[in-house]
Amino acid sequence: MHRCPILGTRGSPLAMAQATKVASALEVANRWAAGDVQIVTITTSGDRIQDRPLADIGGKALWTKELDKALLDGVTDFSVHSLKDVESDRPRGIQLAAVRPRADVRDRIIGAPSIAELKRGAVVGTSSPRRQAQLLALRPDLRIVPLRGNVDTRLGKLEAGDMDAIILAAAGLIRLGRKSLGAPIPIAQMLPAPGQAVIAMECRADDTLTVLALRLVDDAATHAAIDAERAFTAALGATCHSPVAALATIDRGRIRLRAQLLAEDGSASIADETRFEIGEIGAAAAFARAMLERAPAAIRTLFDAA
Image (cartoon, rainbow, N blue to C red; front, side):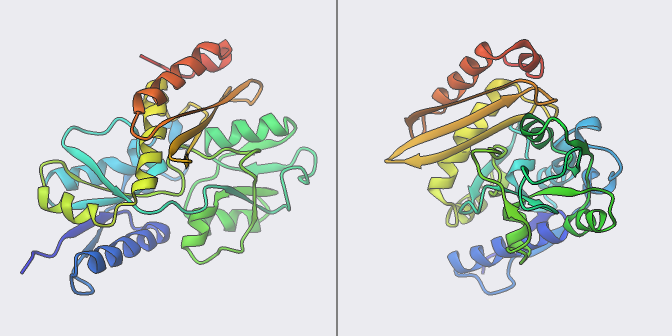
């Protein structure tokens, strides 16, 4: 009889929905009984601190460091994350073992039919530097205000009239059963964040049994795509303050990587795309460095490429 594996996750409604989906998939794939995967919720610094943008208080690590400690201390066997919230530079000893098939990568606007139809000077809520820069590049007249909290908290601020519209990820809304909420924003207008719409599973690199169990639910195409996106981001030296978008897809057996770098206020941007063989993450890194070399100073200063 196998020991029941322990899954560590944040306790937000979205995180729990994602963890439950992963647990069910693992039980089916490994022929375990329903309920064999134990879900343990862990409160992260990002959950506790809600009054400031993450970029001002430590960035993405605030979503992961407590989960990482529980994993490395043996309290949990693996962690489930929204991959876009996981920094590309991970602690030694932790392995990104598997990802689930990618969902809708687009962002959605709630409160208006489209970005173009927002009234002049509209107040839009988001704490994402990428979304802020992309919005201002399209509509310099908009006023962007910080927006933190779970989906219900964010929707509550919109309903209270604190802002005219908010931007949320389509994948999260779909996973919460709210697939009809908001209007999708075309990728041509807002390229997503690296790793957006991907649920990731991390475990200890030396835990062979858990690695093998997780790999049974790994989606190879999604994994190849996010490896390219994360290599691109790592080569840029991107931080939580760096407005960067990247989306890799598989096109005729090769990786197609589209990317955009922006100034914080949207006043400058550079967009490009490249294609390379699956697994050639060095090509993604070279593409990042080449884009940064061509970028204006307002963009280059926001990155710390090696």
